[in-house]
Amino acid sequence: MNFLFAPDSFKGSLTALEITRILERVTLRHFPDAHTRGVPVADGGEGTVEALVTATRGQYRQCQVTGPLGDTVTATWGLLGGAKTAVLEMAQASGLPLTPPDRRDPRRTTTLGTGEMMRLAAQAGAEAMLLGIGGSATNDGGMGMLTALGARFEDAQGHALPPVGGNLGRVERVILDGLDERVRGMDITVICDVTNPLLGPEGATYVYGPQKGATPEICRELEDGMRRYAEALSRAAGRDVARFAGAGAAGGLGAALGGVLGAKMRPGIDAVLDAVGFDELLKTADLVITGEGRMDGQSVRFGKVPVGVARRCQARGVAVLAVVGGLGEGAEGFYDTCLSALQVTPDGPMSLEYAMQNAARLYETAADRALRAVKIGMRLSEKQQKNRACP
Image (cartoon, rainbow, N blue to C red; front, side):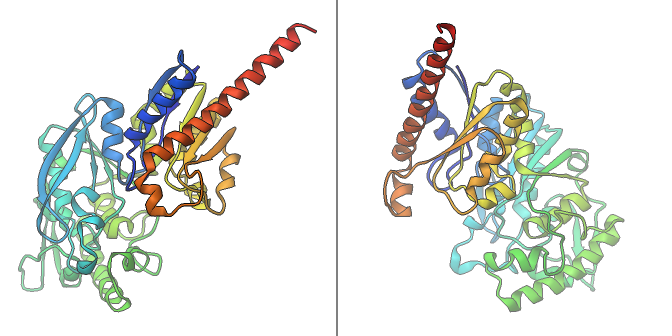
């Protein structure tokens, strides 16, 4: 048998690479002659760099960049095999985990470090870029990112403005002439599942601002500022940067990426699966094993990793087994995507804290249970074939 492993990470407990190693160990325990291939995947958030660098045998790069609060942070990005495409996670430089809960205020955060990473990727010779923009701490409309790339934002007196969310309403003039030509010339794909516009009740500020520390009063202030900023940026870019799907992603970073740099927005899992050559790997697969930390109706509705994998498998007639950390309402919708089965990692009542602390052991025993069932199914199939051959 040929097994293909394509799991997402279990956020905060197991990386996708760790999961593929567990799956290989358990699979060979039950099927010693099997062929296995692991391709860790992600949907544009945490783990995207690791998944793509691992799958393409690329290389990691580390850099010091400006964090969301203006301090220096260490970020990791990657060059895919062939060294022509860079993969970045904006959360590495501008992510919510980099802001302590008591300091979260999107008026004070910036995407400056994301732009610094992009510039470094261009300096390294990358001609294309995959940029995951999940998990941001920011609501600056991409002002910081563009500043790092050479743009200038001025107030009414012509003074340069620090690129933070609280200064959006002070932007009078945007100068894009100094943008880094190497970045402007890159083929940029934004890995993004968010389709929100920049402004309004479904926009960046009101939908995502509260999780970044914005009170209702701060949301109103940021929304007013974002509206003025969008008008100035649209004048400079020569196009409306506010209304296209995804403009509101990552606190408006999508508006700057798509509206100014001409980046293409793609659903996370599809972009990643294409980058790792998943369809080609699927041609020889008998069973695909995938999974994520929690499967529920949103996983199905928004096409998270297991569902994106299952849809590709359906097109090829390959069965899918998903090993997940937990099940929520609507998870049964997964069965409608293709011939599939679900296995959960908990083996009894337990707290979330215990499950995360013991994630590796629980995952291994869950995979063991699932593959024992696969072995039984194979034996039954073999028995039926023998019975048909000997009436």
